[in-house]
Length: 552
Image (tube, rainbow, N blue to C red):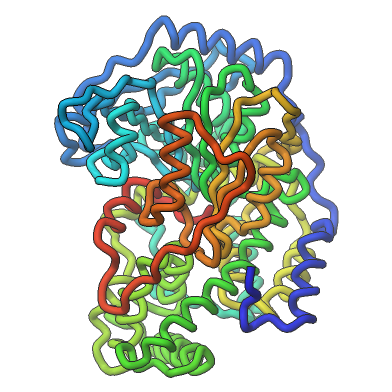
């Protein structure tokens, strides 16, 4: 993995030290055990039996779940306990979507393909919905899989209409234009601390006693109930990003229930990393990806006129930040909205042309393209607020966090010296966890021994910023018998079923035939995006696979 140009040897050492050092301060003592207890295991068994008996009554999809859903997409609900320790207590419903296996071989229309069951997908977040996932079956790269599998998506607990979680009034969610200082003042830090405390209080006030039950362990239990409701004896699952974490929890908790599992863009499941240190690692990795993007812009200076070196591109970006701080573009886009738009480009390189083009147009006198790609959309405020609430609740509930802001200030100040692009934005996103009103759990130490699981396929891009590559290596080390396929020198977040034919060959062979390479494999990177337009088909694939959350 090549080092980013911005990193000096001292900077790299600092990042390594930050990642290896405990968070510091005094984390909240976990008030609830992370290891699944007897009561929760019994409760899961009760819920599984009920779900298998009830099944899922699939019908037309509600507009609130999938607007303008095609006829072949059907929706239903599955009932799970809010608290698995009390399976006869309050119940919640999770929305589910499905397309049936077509059983039509796209390469030979006369050949009928055997159905292999259901493939369940989670796009991560936490807080993303998979309700759109079955629609990928219409894309050419997915038609062989859609022939063999029912494609199943769902909205996890808290998301969409699945016992929705909220922490603030959606009407006030989009607060733009906003600032995004890379080296914040002490006064600004005090403002953000106050805002984080207010947000944490809002989560408790708007959710009441439910707040503690939005966890990764509960997501894994819900997945087993969904498996039973679908009539599957063993689960075939694909998790992306955060979905790889609770997928790994599922594998450790229910190993005999697993058929096949793809973990795409795996996060680091080490309990010492979940989630405070994982977020520091993520901020460091985004700096490398931002360097990749600036290098690409510089190589296409004839198109974008933002500078022929990465340093000049950085100065152009800084100039835009300064101008937007003085006067928001379209009255809506300030430095915060600019940073969010370019952070998205750190996830998916098919966004590079539109972001670079918008920045260029703005600096050359036309703000309209920047307003189009960066301005908040009030129509999506409810969905965005919900996703943020679920993200926060799950991450805060899952693990201890430092409760002294001095620890956050120390670690993020150090990191921002060498990785300013996302560090403080990421810190503010997670800071409510310092003041969280619900009990914290101790993360489950995910480990499986030889023969405990069927082989698991792990996919990772070497320069993924949202899920740094070291996490995939650690996931592979912890899941005995798993195989890691690496897309070298590439950084798009989520690589299965995409434009890389080498990756897809391994992906298809595993899902369709259960076949994995004998040892770890690697693939050359996908082609870089062209400077004038996104690659054909990538936007529709991305929208179906990513859900609506883009944190992890």
